[in-house]
Length: 278
Image 1 (cartoon, rainbow, N blue to C red):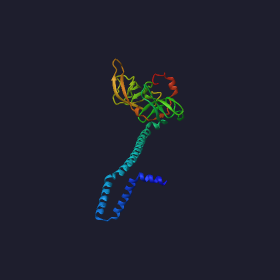
Image 2: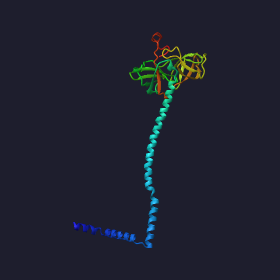
Image 3: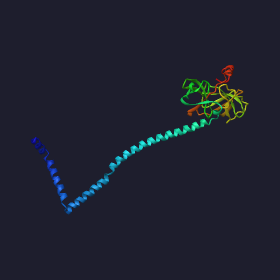
Image 4: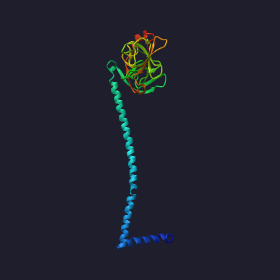
């Protein structure tokens, strides 16, 4: 054991001698109070202070990185909260508008949220989160505070499928609110609806409001459909083409009402299917 320790000391004798001399030098510097030693001490303190001031930013830099990470996390959290609050405010505005719909005093209705939407085909439809359990049945009108959306086409216990006005299968008996001119509203593709079966001699102008008429067997009268944007006489025909901008923005539609309105079955069974609406 002693031999091994001796071998180690012999192998590291230069380092041992250097450490011994360094300790002795430090002791001599500490115990010596001469002018030269005081000068060396002063220079050493000044140098250490300078180095500390120069490189003291390194710990602060590391602390700043940590603080920035925490602040970024807080910013993400706050941004998410602001987004959710903004969405809640917009939803509140939409619901207030829906509650302001005049038809609620005349008809019973069920509020519904759109959970599915198809706006790319010729038979566009929406899926609602209400069904027969809420009293919803086929052919019931779907509306918003802006106007007519469409009708219920099929139901299950908890969901229903609605055909919107942008659907080739829907026909709506309608009239011009200002002049009471009657026609049939249909969709032929594009962004606008068409009011058909209107003679070119009848008074229809740009800006006229189109509403459902009392001749409708599926929809209550007086529901807003849209506004006339263009009238064009058809060459070689007694009729005119009337383009209507829908009142409802189907691309942004999120909440609707289903009117618990059932058509008069006696009337529907009597009228030839497809002559007015389908």
